[in-house]
Length: 249
Image (cartoon, rainbow, N blue to C red; front, top):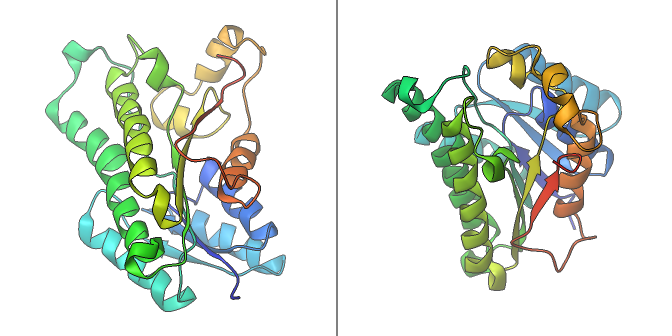
């Protein structure tokens, strides 16, 4: 049997990059998707290849259907199969109340976080489902503990987009459970990645640390470990699960 192939969206940095490294170390062939930072994605690929793994970088915006189609076609061409998908790509925005949010911001948030996840899942199901002649596989969606908290006064729109991912995960899991595909989600809490700075809050981790029962932020590697477990044969009876990796928050 050929080595399993995995596509990770938004894998140039943070949780996506950590997941790519861990997956490659576990024997997966990895497609590293990125939207703009080719240098970061290439660095992840180089690290994997140097360690004896198989990986390549593929540019694409998950919120644009033609990019999604091109990404999956590239995986088809390079690996000839798909066994796993990690829907990690996502965006946040500046801290704002709902009465300050523009439709432009809402469109971007939902297009990338929700529509992008659904488009990628659609293409993965077409390739992995036994209904379509596939051999099965696993999908892991990146949600957020914000989905359970609402993020008032910060980004209710982001929290709502992640709540949509939770519901989508449950529905898709049940839809394809008899077609060899398991679908789960991981809900990270305060994690030490660049997403906070990209949302205009570089000091957010320090400010929120005291609100976490474990009194510390998590690492990208800790989230990646949860993702890999859900992808692996170690969780064969787990589907429709929403796994919190949030330090108890």
